[in-house]
Image (tube, rainbow, N blue to C red; front, side, top):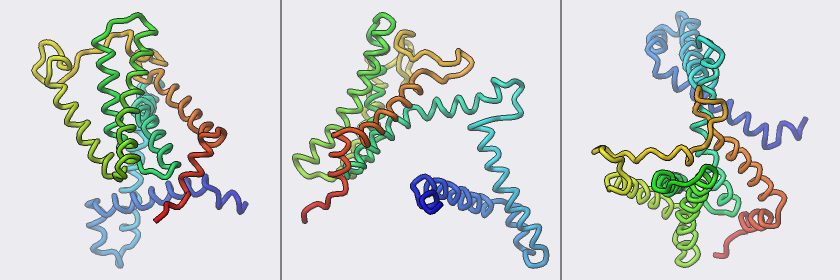
Length: 258
């Protein structure tokens, strides 16, 4: 029992519960009914406690229904649509988080996930709409282009850190802005702007460059989510079962010479 309650898993669960409690209190603090009942708190404390509970639970119920399961849906497919959309949006965040985790285990703070996602998206999108290749090969090249884009953008930070000693936190934050404004610039150039459009919007990718949808056209969830889960397992194995992972874990906690 002591190992269970002091393990990393229980710490994570308690951290989430504490965040929910604090979030509920912050939500209640901005609720109008809570503010009104607080004026006669000592006369009728149950009204105040009920208002706090209602404000927090109402918000969390709406959050659950909008992101996991909506029982008010007309069919089972509609009821599970929020979960499918949440998993779709989480897919690029999972892969970017793996890059952050790898750097963190090596003792580095990668704050440039935003810029790395943008650069990966730029190269992957260009391959997707500029090249017209057969099914399978096209999607593979899009995936490789995204990996190369994110790796190069993060690798530049590592190069500056190794050669000049530039702090990775500052450099990655600056690189985020560079990538963002580079994307804004590219979307206003003929190479990246959709034909016939004056708005900054890119051309539509070829169907051969898009991940196939897992559950058909009713949901946006695609094969990329499965690859993100596979990448998570690979990173776990890399960090905990490989020689490279051991080196990462050995270098990370090692004190730097002053």
